[in-house]
Length: 399
Image (cartoon, rainbow, N blue to C red):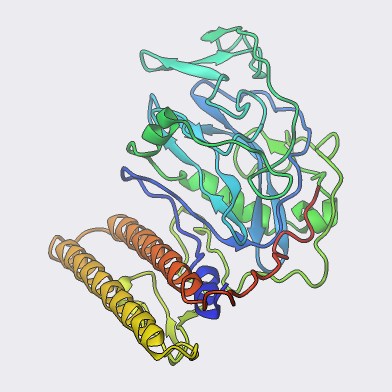
């Protein structure tokens, strides 16, 4: 892969926090090796009416690697809303986390078998009916002497414990047309209790995969952040755990999680962007205004002056289009910022807009990276095409 494209692809794989707008497509930090298998554990009993089960998952911190976020029962943010779990998916050069969200339907979550109603497609652990949630006791532990809105429908779940989609050894599953439509519906990000739960898991050394070998001592809790009484340990790991080799590179940017209270932290390390012939400069925020302008240095001479000139013209035209897109997005984002300022919007609305701007900027740069890769591939002289570099990014897989 060309150097400029590699830099952009790695450095713009930033954590994007959940959005409540249609067209939600959360993408998180990119990691070169996949997470461990989903451990086997027993679900704690449901603490009360209206709680929805949110399965545990492997999250990632670039200081400590993968760590387990215990499954837990969470009160739905509003009646009628269900939880779509996040999942890890192969992005072509690394594993990318697609964040979970609340919505009226359960969308695509990578085909991952998280258990307890999340068998890989949809959710069979319960349903809403006239403002009340009815629990399927076939897959949920519910005290029926206290909670009477229950039913029992047998569910057959697959037995695979693989925790990521695509890549070597990953689940081979694609979103259906219906799941894609659900992904474009209105969504709500994690509630603050879920964010606190993740932060507490990240700060617990025992939950790191390098410590527990894929068998976390706190696999699930009855309520978010209740890591003491009522928490259950994993019975066993979902598969053999392999730590990544020492040579496995970690991503150059750290993924942010909102701190306690659900507000995102602004602690990402500054990213730098640039291509051949560009002076690198930091991009310190998620706005289009902080992006490096696209310019392309002349390609190595091929001996055909006319051909070289044609390629350079194509590169200049591409850079001009990309910079125009930067400018349009920057103007749009600035206008929206000004509107919130005039309305004296509260911090929650400002943060929500900030999250959306970061998402828009990330998607634009991913598009530009693809365009750069395409033009670089077609730039190789005929009969002397460069051999593709060996892909070592899946080294250290846990399977």
